[in-house]
Image 1: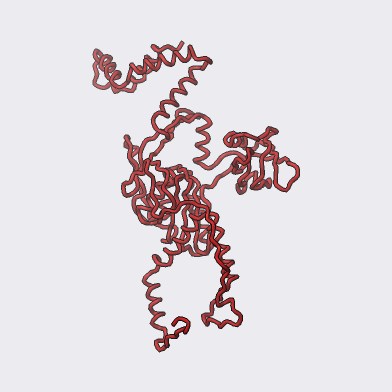
Image 2: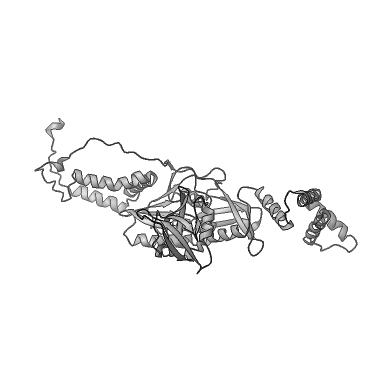
Length: 465
């Protein structure tokens, strides 16, 4: 029988064993330790806890075992501290490890909910789903014979994961197919890369970091190598929007990739182990190319560390909207093989000493995410569209209305799809034109100007008079 007296005794013994006993004589040690224990532990509150515990186990409408009640007590104790401290049961601990490492056993599909059904957003590269030919837009009607209609996203993901080598059958509905069809997949180890990149235009790159995993720094370097193969980098957009954060060390590695030196972030807590400083090492992966960082109210924690550090060092222009404002550090402390607690142990500060807790990073240039509707003007013609027009003599390609329409269509893709990326690209072009001009560039322009013939007579268009 678990009684309040037993609980108080157990807690008292635990406290006594943690106290230093050196320098105490046998005669007075017990009395002094008892007094010290009472000063450290709120015994009256512990007795109240034991009474409540006993009332619940005896009188609650349903029987609950002691182990479950104690687990509830641990959860409540942590949840009462702050929104980010929590108890991780077996499932939560496993999910956290998968998110941190970016590896899990499953099918390799990113899914969402559409019209009450689980819908495939995209199959990941080199995974069972991609090899089986599943496509974006496919609807998972059944999983292992069970209807997926109305199933929550978390439950669907849980059902699709499983041991490596185990099989599961999906019933797929696909646009253009009259009847659903079955696909049997064998689960495999799936690696989720946290960084993806592409060239938006010649010389202007784009990197998206979805979250900060253990190998995000390595993922970024691999993505940059792919961009380097496509030519000289004139500017880079680093997209941290809706990035919830993750591993602090990985955020330091990302900042380090763009800085030659200087403090990246520092943390302060009650314990010496929580007081840390992280600095950059020499080497800028972009060789000094202009950098724009995109943030929004979904950018939190490690994402804010990156944005704040690059902003403080004036290495990047931060654009978008105010970030989330999570300026605390959580430490995951295992308490047995499959359970842990996530405890807030420190606050972090940007290189200039800013704490963004409950305030966030404010962008240098505010750009709201909006839906753009272009105002169409009347159809216009230029000199290049007129029959028999004179050659310009510059040797360059003339630009008529059709050329402009093609160029406009190419720009409208990003302009209408993501106005924040479009504006970031414009800023990069401006920085590349004016900020990156070296003395050598300016001397070359001056030499060209001085070489121009000085005996030219100014030509005046009569229409301008």
